[in-house]
Image 1 (tube, protein in one colour):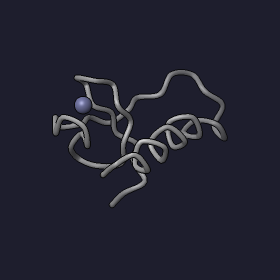
Image 2: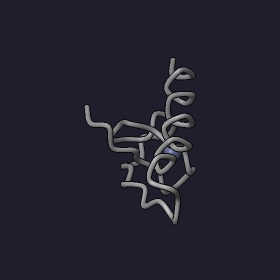
Image 3: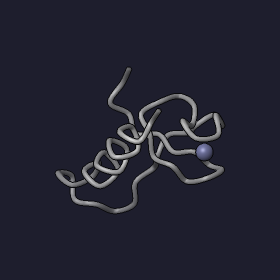
Image 4: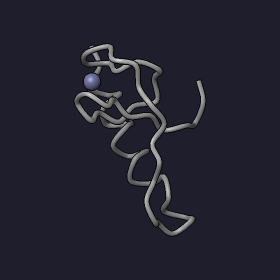
Length: 56
Ligand SMILES: [Zn+2]
């Protein structure tokens, strides 16, 4: 597993998996907008972790 944040292009679910945990769509790398370097991934990581918790 990498620390790369991925997003499902179909349902916009953030995850760390290569496939969406909800619909198994192949996820793509998130390209963050202009965030400060420190907070660059914080938002996505938090959402991704939350989504991971809801898995099965
Ligand atoms: Zn999805």
